[in-house]
Image (cartoon, rainbow, N blue to C red; front, side):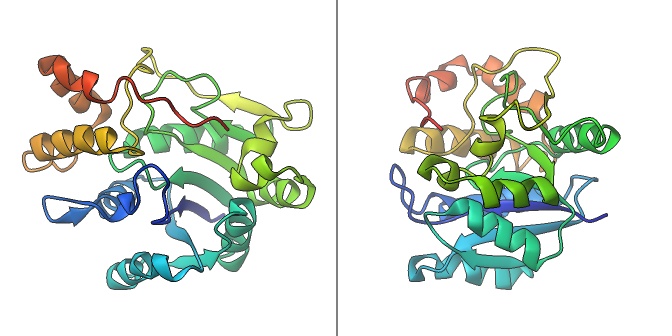
Length: 243
């Protein structure tokens, strides 16, 4: 059974254009994320799902440089891009990640994936976002190819095409959903990068932790923010886009 992390990535972000290619310590945010996802023991392959637009050629060039598989599809219909990427690479279990999560924790990925694999006969979709207890930016969603195929075939509304899993979790009567929670509620934290403020916070975290320990964890970041509580205020006012 092939378990692949499919990371949707594009440079045409409305709030912070080119965010995935922004650099910290000479390395792009997307490189940090791929480096961390590679450490997840449950992931067999990483696939970058980007768009056919010329503006995203640099993402493809980065994948080629790092020998990371990629797929180019629709910018607007992200669900079709995901489905086509999973089909192209014969993925059995999809781990959906977004490219705005450069400091995602591989241990959190493994926790969610393992829970799905151990309960795949009971659930169609397992994630840590249905009830948030993890910091935003550690989002991990897991589901089998058959469920992605069904969502691709059935979803008609624009919002369900723009957001890969929205059709699934908006239909709990049709799909068996499960949430994986953190032991402590850390949902007040926002480590996703969607704005300049988000980037500034993550930049501070990476510049502080990465040179000392590139394997830093969720707990390490929490400790840094306890030591520097003023950092939390940098992006505390940012509202997440609705899905």
